[in-house]
Image (cartoon, rainbow, N blue to C red; front, side, top):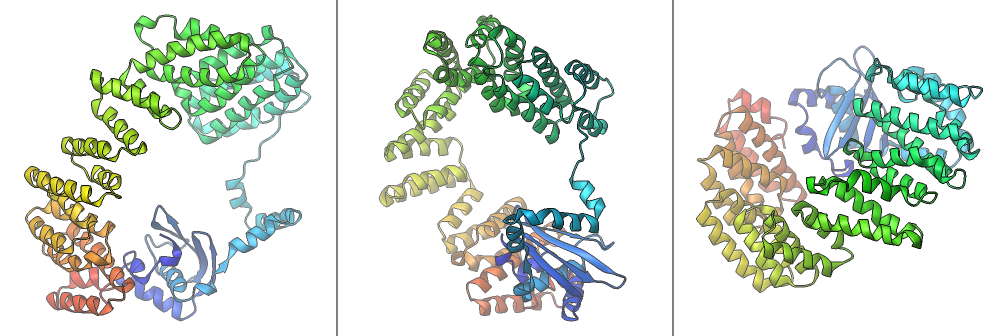
Amino acid sequence: MYWENFTRIDLETLVAPEILERGLDYFRHGHVIATVRLDQVLAGEVAGSVGIYQVRLWLEDTKVKSSCTCPYEGFCKHLAALAIGWLENKASFMEARVFLDQVLKEPEKIPNLLEKLVLRNPLDFMRIIADRALISKTLSVRGIINLVRNIFESASLGYNNLDALWEKVAGVEKLLEKELLAGNQEAIELLCQVLKGIRTVYLNNRQPEVSNYFKTIISLFVKIEGCFKKADLHELGELGMKFYFDSGLWEWKNELKEALIHLSAVDPYFIYDYLEDQVFENPETGIPILDLISCYELLTVVQNETSAQCADKSGYYLEKATRQLTANGDGRLWMIDRMMNSHMEDAYRLTKEALVSGIEPKRSFRDRMIQIHWRRQGFRQAASLSFIQFQEEPNFEEYLRLKKILENHPADWEDYLKRLRIFLDQQGCDLLLFQIAMDQKNCAEVIQRLGEAQDDPSLLLATADFLYENNSPEIAAAFPQLIQMLLREQTASFWNVALRATAGYKKLCYQAERREEWDQFRTRLLAEYPGDSRFRIKFGSILKG
């Protein structure tokens, strides 16, 4: 959803009728005194009975979120007034994006503007910015090493004192960079200590700032080339490899891989020594699939980056990793997915071998074969395999894929559609038949399927959700029957779904310029519940017109 297609109907589903009326009254009497928009955020000030309130509406994952400084819990009249202001007069909302972009183009004005904003609310400023004290540059490298050891090895270090940690270690990266460039061997020791410490903290407190600080430190590996000899980097290389194969540090894998490549420019053999001693030492016990994948990814890059003298070593270990990956079902699937974009024939060969030899999971390999045939324009082979998949596990996604495969072959699609319907009728897959009828925009069949669902509450709710999420003008006529079936259940959960469906139907009628159809329905519905106060409170706003 975007604010441009936000409607009165959407607002009616968010707010109780009496709150909506008060919000409308606030808007009409000028209580909305400031309005602004920044992308998907609407904000403003609304004058209340005892003060001026800050209100905000924003879109998040197609849902409307809200915030108001008043004490009312929920969607209040101040928020309703802001939303009505947007619906009634979008032009009154100042577009902050224009001014923000203008300021960003004139950086010399930013300090003055920032100072004014901070002075207006220093507390908010302190909530969004962290003032990190720099470590004194007069401390020695050895002093910093001792400090870092004391910090990270402290048993009391936890989530609550992370801020204190950053105040102590902020600036270490600047010292490290300076000393690495100078070729100071103690800087390598400090770099190792910091990396070990951050790992310990991260595994206990997976906070974004910890991860970001690690990435800052790991970027210092690029400073090492040309500054140190091979013998100086043994500890750092072994630590980097250990971290690279640590499943707990999977989030940092790309940064670590890049760091190891830089180290290999100084010592091209340390990677192979580690693989021989730590990864492939006892292959009979079975190497974890994630380690094999990590090994393969690293070696494919190393093979292109290292000198010709290492080509044999790289090829040897890459072949070992490949052989063990393809012997495992999950590993082979990973290899196929990797090859599908660049080595289609190899992907086809690996997939066919797996299907012929019965390697599990068979369904996953068949899924890859469907994709391969489809990409190679073999639509009939792809469709045949897709239909087999559908019969084994009927689902709407596989139906959509089969439809997509045959989109340029209508005769074949009609044949498969008939076979699908017969199969699903035999299996009693009522919801899936309803979904297919919806996708085919067959309103008569949709209404028929709804009628069949009235004796099954769970099926009725499922069809209601699908109808609402996938509505279109072609099946609008199915909404009245659905809404009345839901209302007959007389429970809060069904009435909530009915309210949602009513909003969807109203919006559909308005967008398709079929207001007369909506008016006839709401008149009929109001006549069915003339003295029902619960119905009036629940549906009063949305049935007003």
